[in-house]
Length: 107
Image (cartoon, rainbow, N blue to C red; front, side):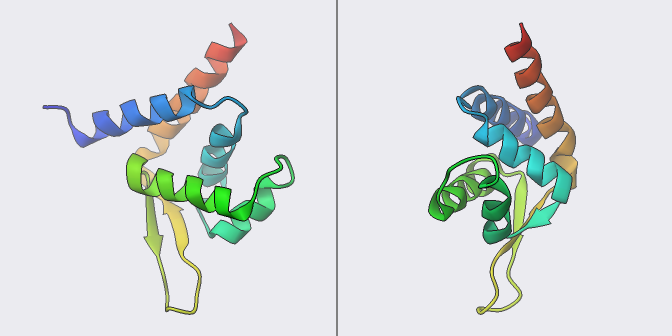
């Protein structure tokens, strides 16, 4: 049986392969850079480069959190927004998936 790490690696590669406009790679690279953020902060950063709604960003983050399993979430109280942070043990998998995407697009 595959390890969890191998499953996550496969899911990450598929997620990045299906990235047609670079948005998925951009979100993952932002998580590598900032380590933790909220959907609002991420949306503000992404809209500098892409025309995308806040709900689309929230949906993408939710997908990365639930299906890929490379994020953790924390909520201080019911009044504060959810803070998503990158699980450190998967940073190398994300980097390699992003590097394979850029090397494949350069060919």
